[in-house]
Length: 199
Image (cartoon, rainbow, N blue to C red; front, top):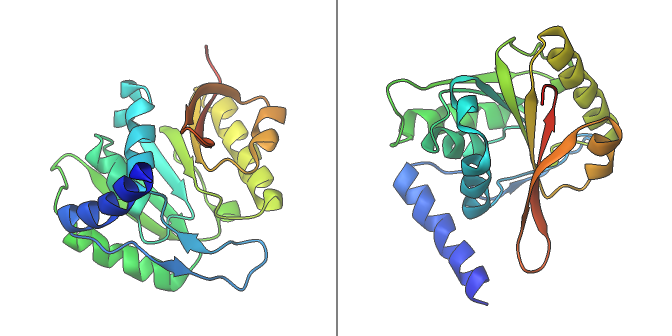
């Protein structure tokens, strides 16, 4: 009960503190691209603070970025180059409005919002972190995972995948992504951070 109250309070607290509007659910008619819903603020802040500090000056990509909640949380946690890839044009419009209103932005950080299919997006060479909150089906996620593997190999770099509510965790593990950290509550696995590449 206490945890539920804390989560509910944090939702309004951070929306006000950040000056953004990212709540609600936006449905999708596409069977392979799921509805938008922002992950809980407390979970997001914990996950981004668990990632290695050296990633903060590399690019972080949020696939299915929606209204941008995860990107704003990552920026608040010190990540400097943030890219959101989103298929829905209306959500892209929403995130750009939120970026204009975001109160915590640091001078050294940059946002980029890309209206594009995740499968067509070219990953920048310096990308170190990928964030997912089940934005699409396992069929699309598998293809995106393959693109991430190619990115890691082609650039000879290690990458991290921050995956909240990891519904398709078997997919990542079968492709060779190793569990870097598991974040749990008393009831369930809230997130898994995977690592691929150099040890």
